[in-house]
Image 1: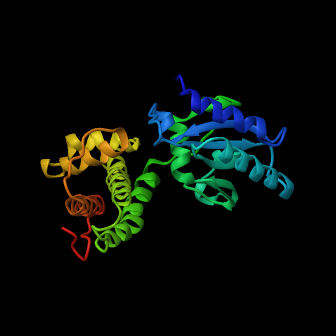
Image 2: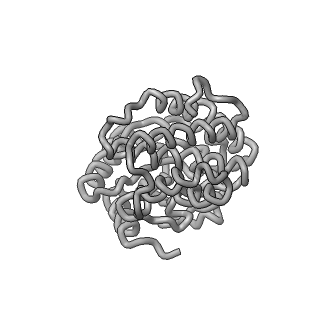
Length: 264
């Protein structure tokens, strides 16, 4: 796979800034693994393998490296720093590790269950042993149940919050909400329906062939906000109403449980 120049540059920058001898491998997950890169929208998701659990001093060095990464590029470089042996085990048992998300560095957890499956199915090797030679834990049934639960908890909560949003909010805020919610729930539903992982844009395009005509306008709007194109709505209220209704519909379809109070 030929990676965008900006992605290659970020990866090499990180490897040059990381504590010497600590990083044994660098692997990409997320949209990059599917060959999706949208300038100004995509970030770079990674899993870095380490030679050992980092000391407090090395954790601080990693923090400084990521601070320099953030100052160097506007592209978020999000991921976690683990051992190769961690990849062979159920990621739900992973101890707290150094992670960075949207330029915030801490010791904790990200979404390692999804990351492990993306590594195994669509990961990209940047440095270190090829992923095909590593033992990466996966379980299709666990991933399916995790995805349903994500819709049933996190996204159900978001759906109820959407019902309280104001159509008088700034347009950029409503645009972000539309793109994030519509493509976010469609991406999870795609996995539940097909058993396969996909990208945000991939989920949107799949949705145009899977969901009924009623939802095509809001799907096209979400894709437009991510990929460019002509606006599908003339007013903010209609856009927000469609975003809320579609999100609720997918949560219900994916979990088999209605959303209350109704947002449709």
